[in-house]
Length: 175
Image (cartoon, rainbow, N blue to C red; front, side):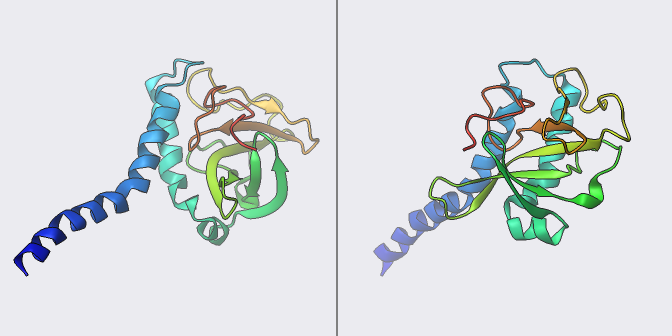
């Protein structure tokens, strides 16, 4: 009886460690995404804004939560960007790191679920003839969309490392 109790201690510790691993993995990899961005030296204010975006979107790893908060699957899947979930009520002329208009999802390697990989900010061209100010510094590069939707677009790869940079438009790691 005494030996079985001693066995339960390491098993319990292992269960706690394993159970907390996904959260630790997301936090560690998310921090590495912009802190070790090889293409740009981001100012501290940009790191803070990216952290703000992560805090605001962490709950959207659960797609049902994104849908409950008004994000809609528009059935637009672009290689290098993923599946787009848009919250139309957020589309205006204001840029807010904590309120991305689009969530970008990619199927997991097994294809059994979607994984949040990044966000996209949209500002209608009609409301802003020039690129929005966006994140602090000059690392973010807004682009005038080529699909003809009439938006300034900016992707931020806050949940999946992009070898082309945190603000690269496409991410080669997204099928």
